[in-house]
Each structure stands twice: as C-alpha cells, then as structure tokens.
Length: 313
Image (cartoon, rainbow, N blue to C red; front, top):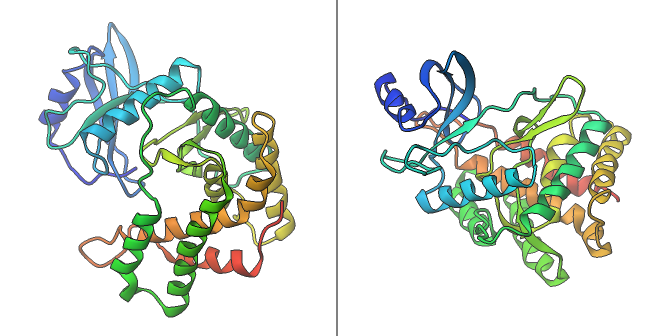
C-alpha cells in the first residue's frame, strides 16, 4: 500500500460524506507499499470513533475493482478474516465518480510479523486453504493479472535493464510456466499476495486479517502457497530453519485441504515462477527518478537460490 494520488482534504471529506459512517476526524497517508493510494481515516458517529482505510485504486479499472469488492464481501459473509468493504448511501461498495475507483474498508486490528515462526506459517497455510475453499463458491471469477502473457511481455519490456544471468533465469521461468500447464494441477481463485505486510496477527499470535486482494485471480492453487513460502520462509540463511517454516506452512494448509501428489512435486517450480513474477512486478515500479520503489534484485537473488538449493517437500 502507498500514496500516489495526494487528494486535498476537501475532496476526501466529500468522499467520506457519501458513506453513512460519520464525520472525518483525522486522516493519515499510508506510505508503505508500491501500488494503490491508501489512507487511514478516523470517523466519528454518535460519539463513537472508528478507524477505516480509504483506498484510491490505482492498479485496477472499475470492473475489476467491483469484482474484488464482491469477492471480499463473499469471503466476509462466510466468516473469513477480511475487511468489510463499506456500502455507500447509494448502495455502492465502489465509488466511481472520481478519476479512479474508491473503496472504504474497515480497519482490522493486529500487527505485521516481520520475523515469522513456525506457528505463524502454520496459521497462514491454514487460512490460505480456507480461502481456496470459500472462494470456490464465488460466482464471478477474476482473471489472473500476472499470467504467462504478462510475464513474457514484462521481460521483453525491461530486458535491457537486466543482466544476462537474470534474463536467463526469467526465460527459464517462462519455460516452466509452459511446462507446468501439462501437470493438470487444480486451478481456482487465489489471493496471490499473501506477504507479511498483508497479514495481521493479534498479540496472542492469532491470525486476524488477510489484506489486499488486488492480485486475486484464477491460478494454480499452489501458487498461493509458493508466493507465501517465498516471502515467509526465506528470512534466514539457515536451510534447516527455512525447511521448518516451509513444512509448517504446508502442514497448516493440509489440515484444511490435502495437496495432490502432483501439487507437492510442483511446489518448487511454483516457487520459481512466483519469484520471477515478483522480480518482474518490481521492474515495473520505477519512478521518475529512475529508482525502483522496491528492489527487484531481492527476487533475482531468490531465483538463483532456488536453482542452487531447490527445496524439498
């Protein structure tokens, strides 16, 4: 999450006025992240204050924003730990009168875990499997924004900025994307972005929220596990610790949904593809000064590590 559209306070007050949640008390830009513009807003109604997140959607058009809002509402109906997308006075969960879609969501209490332990990974694996089960009943699938076509096009667009070694690794990821299609792996709606900064835990280490659904789309179900493993289980250089975290996440997942044998075999490939996607995604975040908002070299290093030290399951 980040802020790229700096709205004047009068415009924000006008947006808040379209909801029946009270008057604006304070607003704080959320400066982390690389995609949408987000603000913490504190509202007061009937003498009670409540915190929300106001999102100006920069990475999706109105149709996709509506689909994401519908998915989040579906998940919440079934008790999934997702923010409520607030309905406006006119019955809309996505406002479209501005230059970009706008959403107001409840703020879930909790904190981000920067140094995960096995229990955190186990809980996240379980929640991802719950997501897959609940989302299987969602009647309006979202397309995968980071598919093979996107990956190939992004590599070609940014190839001049890449070393020969990195370019070879990314081309190998394209090949693996083509090969994995022959495995007949289960496909469904995935979250696609279960990073540490999109997951909240309570002080008692209970998972309270899974945030940011703008990467959601139809994909191989194991891609959610692979993307999460790449972020949560590689914080240490010690392979025994990495292995323990990986197996904790897979164990948590399988408490809810059992992996097919072909899925288990394909997990290292999915991790490689996931790392390539993130490397390429970060290549697209260059600002006007020629700097990346988040360094793609982090995932260049992970691609090499996955080749040199392939994980086992």
